[in-house]
Length: 152
Image (cartoon, rainbow, N blue to C red; front, side, top):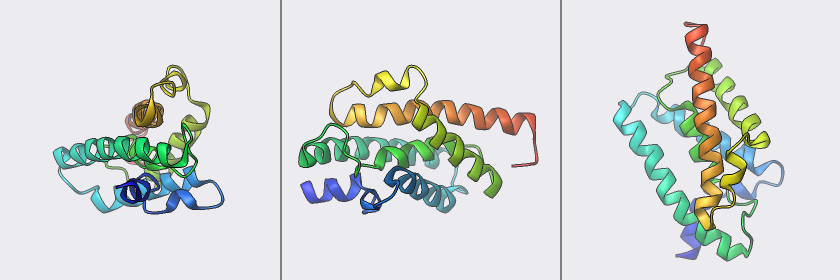
């Protein structure tokens, strides 16, 4: 079970990338978005919920395996966050790039209260901060789409 948790938590090994594993994890989220962006809204929501629930378990187990609170190899939080940022936007490639950049910037800055969510225990803390910044990212992306329709 630990091996499965590490595989899931590292997004199939993306978290072991030697440079910027979080960015690579976000890129995995982008690929999943492109594979599923034509799905009905309810399926897209179910995907984000499923990745979040399974990811929380996997992140918790992987943190115990690596004996660290938030190991760098755990990038399932970036996958879930990227998916939530792009959720129900229907953006094409330009909007996807914008959503990717917005999520990565917010994940680095972690505006209030996202940084405080890191204090939650185990996998919940690993996932919660990225999901909070993803909510901000999704709202910003939807705002840009509203202000500049047809561009994204």
